[in-house]
Length: 275
Length: 356
Image 1 (cartoon, each protein chain N blue to C red):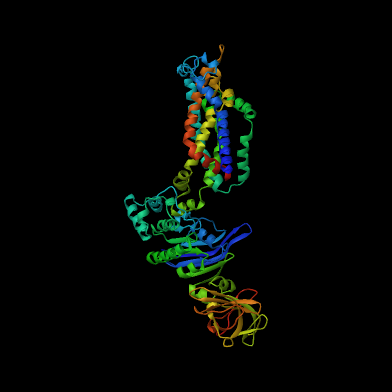
Image 2 (tube, each protein chain N blue to C red):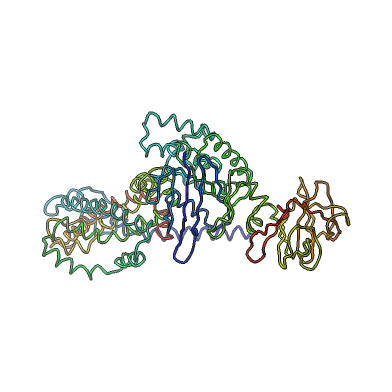
């Protein structure tokens, strides 16, 4: 009897810990979610009950804030980054996975090592180079920078997926009459599709959230959403309600993507990690 | 339809030798089995024929054409892999149809030919399934159907039955035999299972350490082994290899026991090879030699006696109703027509007049 009671007690403790953990993780999001629907008076009070308003979401798209172009910039930059990164990373990953290359290990390590270089270290050369070739404050410039950030990650992740495809399967296709490119098209891409989707979404999220490079390399035309948040720090003080509304707009696609990749997430991460 | 000719074929990975300067001619429509323990080079040989591995040296001809520099797709072969190599994202139909599709078979003809191939391996009801929803035996059938859906010059089969359970293996072995009789396409079949080799092959090439030890019909391999390796590898139980010497036309086991008369000249060191089936247990004192029973095993359809001859153990096949106790002394009769002598140093066969 006491064994069951102990077990029940432990279950309750576990449930309580989970609730606390969720609460700690979600509290900023809850706060921002509430603030986004408050007017500028309510926002300074920790009220849970108030008259919600959608005005904030309209205001952020109006002058002087004009979040619309920034939303467009963010979307275009992130999508273009994914559109270039995934095909190129797939080809690189296939090469690393299936061929014995001279200096293969060294190349893989170097690719991985670029991930550990602090962004602030390389931001200056980027700035100087972009200034000289006229890429400052352009979407193309931002896309290039984002590619530099996401490619190593995408290569490693997709390589993990391709490593997981049995070599037999590809060899069977080659014997069956397929060329190497045919094998990639008919066998590798369909089998690695969940991995490509996961990697693509991760790249999108990284590019979408990228802040530091966009802050330094843009100032007017190609400003992205995260930089746009700084707009709401005006002479009237911090406009928390507008800031929160913009925050929701930034977060919303992330929640949608999280839902899409939920089922691939674990598989994608473990395959990328173990292999 | 074509013969496959390997000329001085060699595969090395750095200092490691996979296949060592081997030549082999597989006749048109022949079923040739490459048999050997793991790491003997049989799979490497097959992969070089398929074009999946590149030979270090030597030539491969298929149907009179040198294919060394051809991609696998240009060699007009079909292959069955040990792990089946099915396309998991495609249905059984699409799996079988794939070789036709990539080779540009007219679309209207594909369903007909897939249907016929599926029929030949009794898969007709499963065409809409994905490989994941099939049992091991069914997957193997898909792999077979994918191979026979075209008529290639050569079939290559790489241990196609080794992932199946024992019972299914026997069934599928029969299926492969039936298919090969029907299709009459040159087939090269790799296995480490001597029963598959014995039952399926027109000829068997026994390999070890990258070298073909013997090439011959199953009968030749079984009854007339070229060396001690082949003698010990083929047969279950393996051939008894008794070391001793030959003096005055009699084989003496180590320790001095005279075993059997043999028409060979005197040899200081020799190994006598004799199959358990060619040793008959008889009454004590009535055979060629007496020996004590070490282990007695009842296999159901026959019995197996492990006997002590000096320090050596020798197996003899007894009748179904034979019953012996350990340490009981029995007589043994050698079948004089099936005695083999080997040189213990080189392992080579020592031929003698009157001997098999």
